[in-house]
Image (tube, rainbow, N blue to C red; front, top):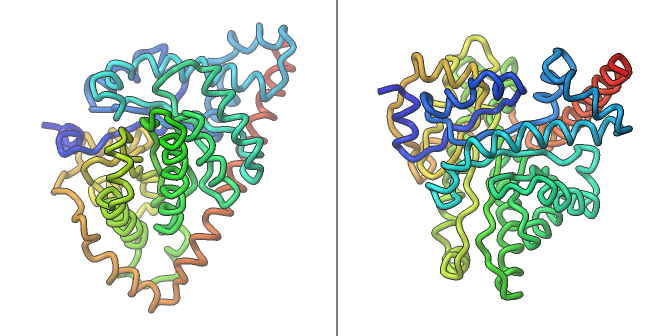
Length: 358
């Protein structure tokens, strides 16, 4: 049995963090679903920039859209919604079989809106309605300004993938916003069954400090953060507050481990997949990491609900001079800036391609 099958059997969803038109046209995504236990998909501006701007797969689709007079952003969303709608259809049997727990794809609102709550809410509603797919998440950053948008989008019935979470405090703030949105739905007499995931980024922690900590601590911080977030997740869904929502018909916001490819070449290429196996969670990974795990990964059991040794590892990092709270804030701010840069690169690439094809 492949390690991917074992992980899926243990209750963790394996999602692919990639989408290209070639993945769809060639049947590669369908094959990953059938053979590698892939049950969902995430995307971001960097992924689309590489797919659209650096190849010819989208040229035939871009040309008629250019003739329609669409600007770069409108053109991007037309292309992305087409790809993600096709992917959503591939995952729809999984979505139905799991009663809406799994089988989702994700589309991000413009990163330029990360610090504009009202605009983010409006865009989330618009994109979800335009797609018309029940198994589409709209990705909203879990920044301070993004939290009201998460609450209001949830209240409006829009499934949200909360992105750019780094610390356990970030995760809990996102979960709080989600629960407030559900509680408002209950108070208004609306169905609280609005799905969500909360994406905690892992490998960027270790990349940020890899040269600043002793050898025994290298590539340990991201896993400890994941363990700590998982403990908080398990405690939250066991809380009286959540139980009241569940009794009203809500389903848990699942914890999602993102950025789980190894960034340090000295680390094992499936490190974060093996170490963050956890039931009722999601791990989204690039195709190369997925295939590496299927080929030579090891499934050695699941995370402990009590966080394992995360407290000791975090204490060791603090002793080594790592300010985890400050680093979390920096990583989130840097992540938001990187997404904006990728978004601008994406629009430039689309503009150049549109001009060439016109």
